[in-house]
Image 1 (cartoon, rainbow, N blue to C red):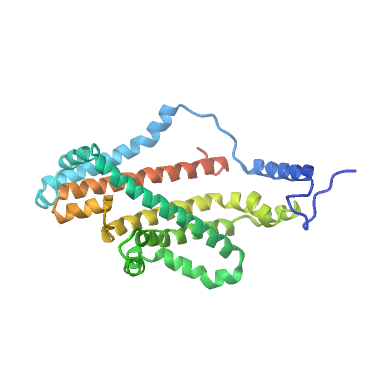
Image 2: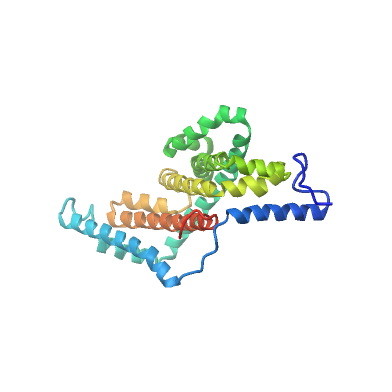
Length: 302
């Protein structure tokens, strides 16, 4: 007697191991239809150079423009120093252990705050996407929080937590979580209805439906939300370290604020470059993850 597909009332996780294995095989088969074909890897050197030379060109253009503005004497040299002075200062900074201690503190705050934002944003996004009354109640509020400048939260954060680590983390989380939530909501909203009907016919429901269908389908949009969330959290953190100086800690923001108090424009620009480089490196990680997902799902020709 031929094996029949489970009805809509069954679940993917059947009571017998062979039922679970059969259902999982069906899901894998459907995934294989959507995945892009595996491509042979080209030469590593060519790929690295193709992605590197545009960045090197952009750096060259920026440094050249910077040098020209400096030579024009638009501002005095002690206010707007030459690139050579700033890069020399940066070279000295990266050899100091205290500099790396500040980078470690800043990155610890960034990772901790972003992890909390991802956990909270994912939970809120999953709930809002599935319950229409909840979406009607707080859907617009999430978007409003996303567009609100993070610096507006610092007076409240200082009142709630004083000048402590909690004040900085509070603003980082509240700045990043809405972007993460909106990314997940958008991804779930754009899961093809056909996929959902196929999943229902195959007996997927509850947690199994999320695990094997909805979450994988919404992953590209979710990664974009994570990337945007990181951008918000990083900006919030930098603002927080300039405004909320925790006693006994020396972070990148504290060092930049100290340089500003001393009218040390060379050091200020050096720390701006440090913040920019860290942001670019993390952005490249997200771009790599996003590109891998798009290639995996056949959404790009590269």
